[in-house]
Image (tube, rainbow, N blue to C red):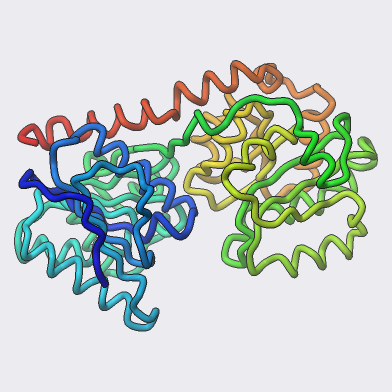
Length: 388
């Protein structure tokens, strides 16, 4: 346990409780980093204390403003970390009495509720996806009911919360965002084509996802199952699956079972600086998920001007604007997945925007770019924190 002190001045104080932002880059971590950046752009003169449960250090090259202190608890053994982190956030909160606590994971709201009971400090939390759709622990539900605001990353997640009895005025939507400057429309990279043994004319389907046993809902296995049917119409199609995780052995077995070794590449982990080139390598991005709270990868693919396919049962509905910006399919219907991908690759999908890269990029930046994210967050805080 410790902190990296960048600079401390006596301003009003905002606490942020995140799982981590420096040593792992999942959806919650990316959202948390953008949330901190947006807050600091809106309120550069207040003091920030950022508590990170799983990080062991804070990056000295981080772009966050100087009046920010990072407290890390990742050096504690995993069996003691939750207790250590809870002690840290409640203890510091009781001592410093910040103006507001914002947590980016629902599980942290139990500690926030306790702190509010002790001190009256208000708290907000972020609801991302499946962890918010069917809340069972009574302690967590009480903590959420007493949150001053719940920021849902999609209308889908908000609707799932309202069905559980939460106050409509309490639950606001703050969608995911992305870094549009990092993602550009480009021609297919000759370096990547050579790396994967592909040619520029070859139709390529791409998925970028963590290959986790707990996230099989992302649907990359459904694309594998659909590939034999797709190959009957498009024999030279190739599927590029970017990501790694503990579900890879199951995927390798499925590839072998379906005899797809010659048309599937498991690319493994790809560094951030290569992601744009990978998106630009494909002719369609596809992730027929049924458990996404939102899905930042859809925004990234659209920012590269790529036709995009997703499932119609989760937060993908928000990311693809209910089908305005992409194709939505039943994620359990392999036939529908295959036929829709064939349509897209053959240029026959009925939504013409899928074939207008610049317009796709423009639309996704207008709807979900960082400027929009920051403006929405500012509008929520404007009347709540007029004194900051």
